[in-house]
Length: 196
Ligand SMILES: *[C@@H]1O[C@H](CO)[C@@H](O)[C@H](O)[C@H]1NC(C)=O
Ligand SMILES: *[C@@H]1O[C@H](CO)[C@@H](O)[C@H](O)[C@H]1NC(C)=O
Image (cartoon, rainbow, N blue to C red; front, side, top):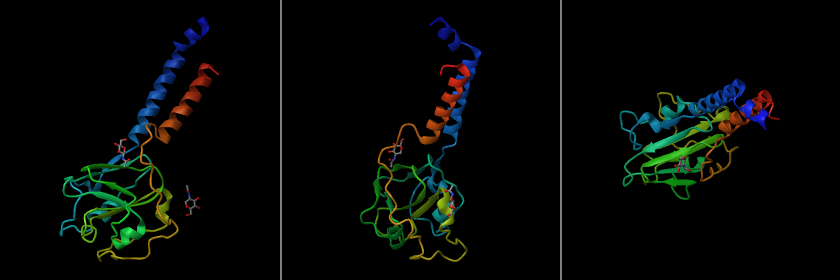
């Protein structure tokens, strides 16, 4: 018993605690919360910048653990997550996820492609729509964002993905990278400290 107490206070264990803390901070910092379009308001793109959401998603890389923040006046707009098919055809029925609180956080919990538009009729047609690719799926489909307008109803979205699985409706309090870092850190510390 005495030995255990002493070993817990040893410098080795202080080092371990510091390591765990750093690992935790590090993994936290690697998760980003993106304000969609870098705009203060999710809405119909201005005529000056109709491709704002397409351009925005093209120039960002998203990872599991990141989240998308949609800000908008709650009485005037909403966000829906839809399938690729619904995204293309602006079908607002049966969305995967519906959010209308004005401060909607979409948590990225898996790889794949995620399609969003407004739940208000007419907004999708006016290009208030966004899709992101998370992880390796980027190789599957890369639309051209040239100066010419994007094809409005391009059928070329990959069907390999089928329907995009809905993310779990809860957000795990401990995400995977954090858990892994902690687990690895713990094992290293256990070995160093000879707890095992
Ligand atoms: C995303 O996570 C935040 C906080 O962890 C939570 O408030 C929010 O409801 C989550 N969003 C969804 C769509 O589950
Ligand atoms: C990425 O995709 C390629 C082919 O599409 C596949 O061979 C490779 O294993 C994938 N990599 C990962 C990390 O999933």
